[in-house]
Length: 139
Image 1 (cartoon, rainbow, N blue to C red):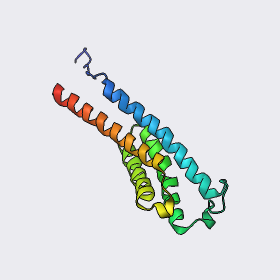
Image 2 (cartoon, rainbow, N blue to C red; image 1 turned 180 degrees about the vertical axis):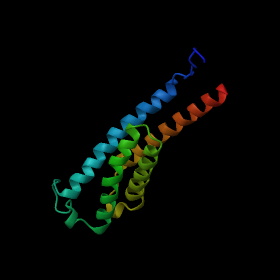
Image 3 (cartoon, rainbow, N blue to C red; image 1 turned 90 degrees about the vertical axis):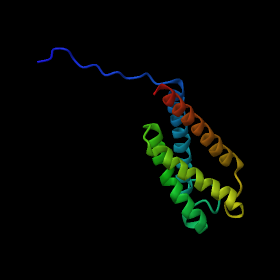
């Protein structure tokens, strides 16, 4: 019978890993707010003739339903630091970029949303690269 307990060494998170966790949480709040905004549009609380689901063009109906569902789920995944959170955010980001850059005549051109998604993607990729290089150096 062994009386000593096995010790498990757990490395403290690096600064880059901590920054990535904070980025996930910040983007989670952003996603939740955008999800709520899409739901506000869908249920008709927003002012405007075409901002209620039954009066929206079919293109806006499809995009709004998709993003109203995906943004809150992305927020949950990002907040929990789950691996699927960034994947859902990426789906939302690509959808909005395609909407606003690819079809500005239908959806308008929202440079702020496009720029925000690009900045977040660049930050995420940079932090993931730093974490990869740190882990590679340790092993």
